[in-house]
Amino acid sequence: AQTVTQSQPEMSVQEAETVTLSCTYDTSESDYYLFWYKQPPSRQMILVIRQEAYKQQNATENRFSVNFQKAAKSFSLKISDSQLGDAAMYFCAYRRPIQGAQKLVFGQGTRLTINP
Amino acid sequence: DAGVTQSPTHLIKTRGQQVTLRCSPKSGHDTVSWYQQALGQGPQFIFQYYEEEERQRGNFPDRFSGHQFPNYSSELNVNALLLGDSALYLCASSKDRGLSYEQYFGPGTRLTVT
Image (cartoon, helix red, strand yellow):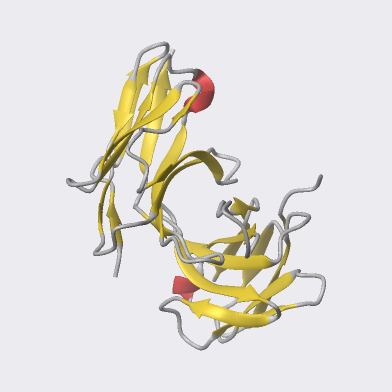
């Protein structure tokens, strides 16, 4: 079974600075999808960024980028120029690539605080 | 374009009672997944419905059951509620076909069992 681990329960960063959230996962499969989701106090889970394991290039979405290390099974999220609106719980998630919607396996989450 | 909607927003039930939660998927989506998120934890997969059938199930007891209707909306039923069932219940919808595997989440239903 696949597992996802986030070893940082809480992180904090000064506004406008850069922060990196860590995620490791365990799988015996060679192809899969990895995601970072953001859950603000409103509770709605929002997709931040997605990475396909067969792609060597790291995904980037505006101020958000990932460092995907397949051999190390590591998938970290870097947030540049942090903004107050980035404060939320962040979850790393894994999904098998099988055709058809498949379940997401989530980590325990990292609570990110932005200090003004 | 309405996103995923869930009802009710909050619910308080007594131990031993039964509860039904509802979810309407995003327009164009045909698959609905349910997740349970305990306080301070990541969501845990309960089950997934496609073509009105349960296609995949997580490690949850039979007290948790569901249904999908022809319009793709879904219900989650929990019988014989336990205190440990108190959690945020998230519904997520997606398309079964295509390369876009993104699951869109609703705002959740907060269930409190007393």
